[in-house]
Structure formats: structure tokens, C-alpha cells
Image (cartoon, one colour):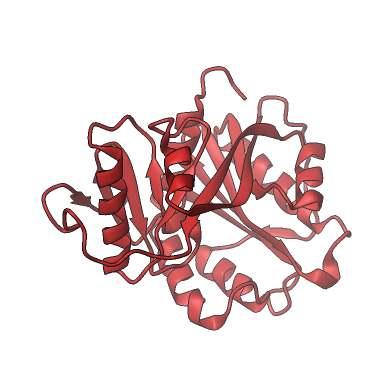
Length: 271
């Protein structure tokens, strides 16, 4: 990772690149809601130092999610604030799940790849159609996915491989200044181990570098060995992990302070 890019900056890029439908700033934390579609858009991100009492703050977050009919999910990193939060959540019965690695690589040493056969730049609507044809998500979740992607404030790099009526795979880059994030890489099961995934990543990196990006990042679950191996071959390395904590037995909706009160600062997407 470039020494000028902090882990917190990577977090900010990633949050901006994958918007929520609703976002709340609360005492250094960001609460995100998207009708339950993906944990990353429906979780508490404890990015900055807090001033409120931790127990009360957690309870207010729980009420905010309960009022929306959602489970309370915290997304934690080794640098989440306060540092005692992970242990506090564990003591409250929050289970740690889905350990994930943020991987990154500089683009200054990117080789000249030339034309990459079979991978094409498409518009976002066509990309979403290809994504839907691949059957990654059930139909009832696609409407929310379309809404989330329509809210991306930065330049997107939608890529698809194969014919439009029978796509072999898709990849989505989000270019924001010096960074490009890679999201939603998916290859049809019958086309795996043919180099489709590699071609989709290489093409995204090439386009982003041509447009001025200096660093790429992505997020991959720790248990996804094949994907991690592919990214390592393409020059990505581990920057830091994150994980979620989920409370299986949700509390009652009553609490010390309403999430719709003055303690929470409502605003549209963005940090």
C-alpha cells in the first residue's frame, strides 16, 4: 500500500463507493441502512473517536436498526473506535462473522496489457442486466441492488465478459480520484478456471490506471481461497481485515434515546 494512503482513507473510499439508501452520522460513527441488502450497506461503521458512553451508544444504534426492522450489525476493523468496542460487543452476545480482507495494490507498476479478448466496457444498466442473468441474487433483491448502484457518486467501470444474453462474468470498478475499488466480481460456474476472472480484473485495472488511478483495492472473504489466490497473483496484498458482529437475540425496541431524536444527525449518503 502506498505510504500516503491510510487505512482510514481506504475505508472512506469503500463506503462512498458502495452507498446505502440512508446514512446517519452519530458521534464519530456512520450508521447505514439499505433494506437489509448486503451487510456492508446495513451496518454501523465506528470510524472515529466517540464522546458518548459506549453502552448507551450501542443501545441507540440497536434502536435505530430495530425501528427499521433490521438486525443490528457492526462492521469492525483493527482500528475501529473505541478500541474496546469489539470486546464490549462480544460481552453483549454479538457473534463475530464473515472475516474479510481488504487487499490493495499500487498501479504504478501495472504492465501494459493491450487488448483483453472477451471483456468489454458496458454501461451500468447493461452491467446490471448481465449481473441479473448470472443469477447471483434472487429477483426480489435486484431492485435494491439497482438503486444502490445508481447512487454511486463516482465514475463507474462496468465490465462484462461473453455474450450479453449469456454472460461469462462481470466486474465493477468504482474510480474515485487516485483510487479504484473492485466490486461484484462474479464468473459463471461453467466458465470458471478459464481465465475469465483474471481478464475482468486486469481490464478494470488497466482502465483505471489510464484514467489516473494510482491504487486499487478490493474486499474478499478470508475463506474464499481461490479468489485470494487470484488476487495475489495479480499483485494484491493484504492491507487489513474486517469482520462483522451480529446479535442473534435482538433487544426490544425501547431504549434510552430514540434513534430519531436529536442525538443522531441525519444526512444523505457520503462521509
